[in-house]
Image (cartoon, rainbow, N blue to C red; front, side, top):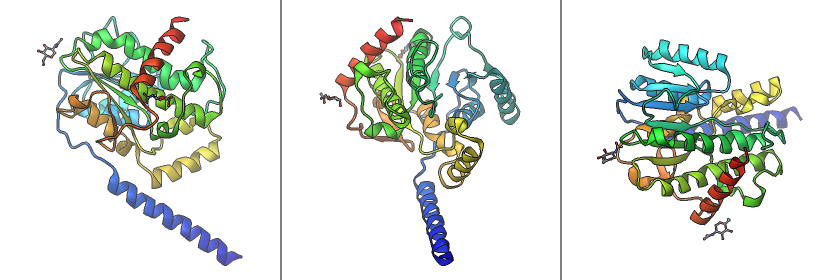
Length: 298
Ligand SMILES: *[C@@H]1O[C@H](CO)[C@@H](O)[C@H](O)[C@H]1NC(C)=O
Ligand SMILES: *[C@@H]1O[C@H](CO)[C@@H](O)[C@H](O)[C@H]1NC(C)=O
């Protein structure tokens, strides 16, 4: 009995180690040395996880970095940490962006949530759908004019590979069918949003991209019970991607030269991937129109 137990544990550890080697060898790194002096970047959900690592990297490139976060205290702490580590003191936490900024060059829609169950927001929208999709849709649209003032604005949408197998019924965007289903649907919406946004912006100087960051330790686990969260985070942190690794594709899409020809497309590990079978232009268009209708009610 004991013997079996040891064998099982050893196999699990061996599998995780092989997985770690695989992930280490396939993780894409952004090698660009691009300097962002004079550019303004806005990162949502930048107080922790890959949002924080993205903000740090862009701060090191001398950008003005605006952290848009839900929790003021956590955001201010993150600002202090970034200033200390990068010696770039042009890092701010604020919410009144449109009236105060001359231009935004890069918008990174990074904030995301999962495990919210069938909680609904004040507006009656499913919370996961609101945080992951409706909010970035609205924010992006509100910031378009100020992004157009940049000579080459970029919008980077952090999605996920779970969208590959997700399904969407446009008439039932706000219907709860389980946590995983809702998460996948919201991430599929991010990718479809990117496709339609690129098409709507094709005559502007703004381009947009979506990405899968990999399995990363993030604050998605924030809502799990304490011990389960600790264990999950330990396993993910040890065997999957670290937050700086997970941030690479966001950073790449924010800074890399000559990617404008990939406007509207999807990336893994700092390289372009084929469109997921779950996505097409018609669906993207229909989703946009339906989303506008939903958001106009508020
Ligand atoms: C858009 O890009 C073109 C070509 O690079 C440039 O000439 C033009 O000034 C840009 N527009 C803005 C608003 O910066
Ligand atoms: C687009 O995707 C939807 C949903 O998967 C599907 O019903 C529709 O047939 C697809 N349209 C095209 C043109 O591929």
